[in-house]
Figure 1: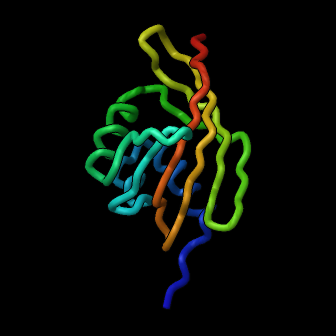
Figure 2: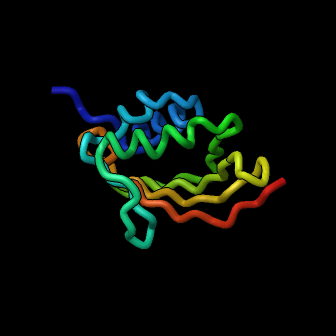
Length: 121
């Protein structure tokens, strides 16, 4: 019986696929019924179809890139602090994010995000 990969390895694969804008590889790190939330609890997307639709828009941004500043792991919970380069209507900028991932059976079950204020260059 194969062991599940460590939660931080799953989240790292997710981050690499995000930066490669590989939507299928990115979705492969999420459970079929995974959900994304704002950190305060508002549901952003549920299931692969909604995750795909929400993320495909982001992956269309030519300068999209997430830079990991810090990662903490507590059991099956992985917390990333990132700076994400984005293409905003006003121009290229960055936004700071805290991402909390709950990983079970080798897949991200939930992801919750706290998003800072955008800074446009």
